[in-house]
Image 1 (cartoon, one colour):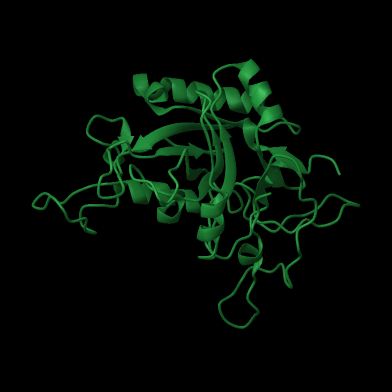
Image 2: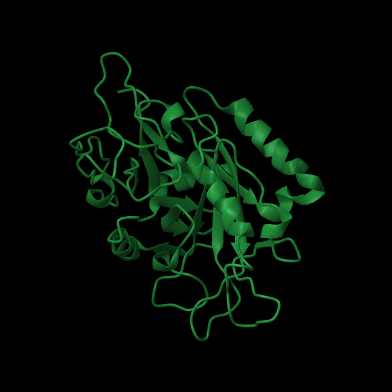
Length: 287
């Protein structure tokens, strides 16, 4: 079938500090360029990479985590969601009269902005998603691990950095998936040139999304297959995930998943009066 597999290398993650300079003019240029060069055959999703200020563990450093934000209607975070210097997402906020406690009264700026990605902007599509890459494994200090993640949707199971280092967090992904609200699995390659992009696409694991066409990549609606093609049960490949979804994204460096197990009903889940859908729980999607 045509256009049923999308390689998510078409997500462009530029450095946040470069895009946010000059009142975000470079960010607007990136969004416009992705729209101009996208087509029915190619979807370019604008986005950026940004650090947060979280640390993890008794001897954790302040290195934080690498986060990624991307989507068809991606937004820069508001100033209130950033650290005072404007370079990092401020996830580790403190009350004015306390140096240790995080309370509901002193948070909400970053979380409210991130969770705005869960609202469809046209009744069908989601604007952007938030995720993590270059994560520590769960035994390391210095930043969050995949099992720690909250208020985010995607996480890189495989990360390849430009300096040659790489990580495979398949075990952490499988553990976090047992919570029934696991991250959308992705592979992220840091590339610094067109030639490096081409080489990464050949040598690295990739993110794959099973859809009928590219308009479904950030969709939350039940898909409508083209005439003569079978229905692909999926719930918007890269959009913000939730506990009752089963997005058709998976990471592989070889085998491809052509057919998902079909749920009993493709109707949206209702807490009362119908059977539970188990798409998300039954899809452990890493090869």
